[in-house]
Image 1 (tube, rainbow, N blue to C red):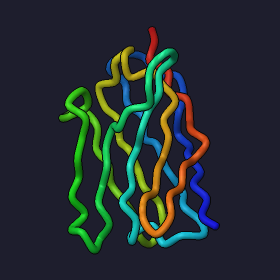
Image 2 (image 1 turned 60 degrees about the vertical axis):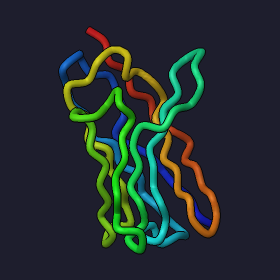
Image 3 (image 1 turned 135 degrees about the vertical axis):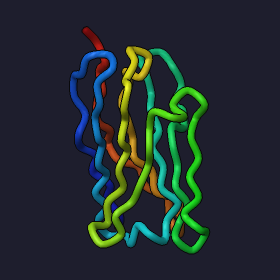
Length: 117
């Protein structure tokens, strides 16, 4: 049974940076398409960034709202996926969730990111 645990969220001022981590256990993450989603209060969950499995060329994809500011990456040796978030804006405030899509489908419990002065 796979498990995803997110960390790295917190309170940051506009223009600041955070790096989220998603530690995977029970699965070999490099064989999964991995993604970060977010859900703000009163809004639907949305895809932020994704990175394909190594068998699919590790293609990355980003929501238009974060292109040029966020970067998704994976460390296969550590079985971890990261989301580097730069130039954060108040509208980035949300709970961020890690998602693994492969033989099975797994979600983490989320980490809160708050961007406020």
